[in-house]
Length: 401
Image 1 (cartoon, rainbow, N blue to C red):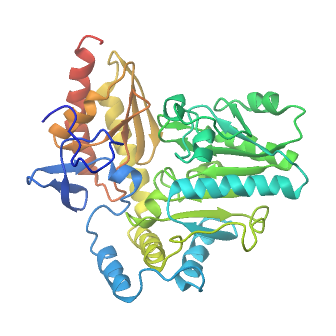
Image 2: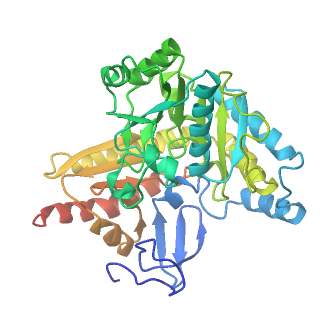
């Protein structure tokens, strides 16, 4: 297997450094490539394939919906939107939902909500607090909110109106916003995904919620990657016992069918009116059915408990395996959202793991990310460790580049 595959077609834009395999089908937590090789899926389509592959309850439901209606347009009522919105508000304790097609769109909608919130209060140039190492998307606005100079490079001028602060430091927010009447919101991921699996501490989450209440700001929590049961609760911020005012969702909500949502509480639910925001594909009947069925199956099969239990088992196994290992900085995360940070760039492990039959990703240059389907079993978690641990140990024994 070569280090990096050549582009699969001269007609496809060269926007991805792809591994030299093409996947053909999957079953549960395993996928097969077009040459018949099998892989254990530790990536879950980047935290998307909540129910794994070819789920025996999801597939017939989607087939049923495709035979009825895939798309109708938001000119008309879509009953599935009401059904999914009711479920999401029940699970979150919030009140209203807007549906789109991606996490980027959900985050973009959140930024628009914050700006309109400010304008409605007479603030002409609203500003939003965002975080170092954050990732919220690749549109110009979400890229501007993102805290990664590498992905921002070449796309300036970026959108103004963002104040950037470090993680888990309440005094840093207070200092950065002191005397500034234009601040309207604080926006962050409960656990940073692309930034390297960095969690916000529970006490810090409570402090930011209190600060937003005190100063009449919106608390906007990006649960695109860490939400939908991945940490063992429906939404990762629920471990802190708080509620946001705005919560973007996507990824795992549709188990692979493109879907995004913005769920809002009373403070933000009525900011948008007709004409303020919209989408062509968002809220289509197929995506809504995928969301409804995903949640139903998660509840019936107790996948939150599975994510918590199997995730704790996997984390503990990795910590035991790597205890005292030189070059291994930390195993962190919660549930089935785990990161293994090394003391050096480790992109080569992506390829080596693939060769050994394990799919994963490397993010923030030096963090191995595991976000497998929430149906992962203890035996499959042990298999991940059995494949990955020798690769990491061998890699760290090599001379630093």
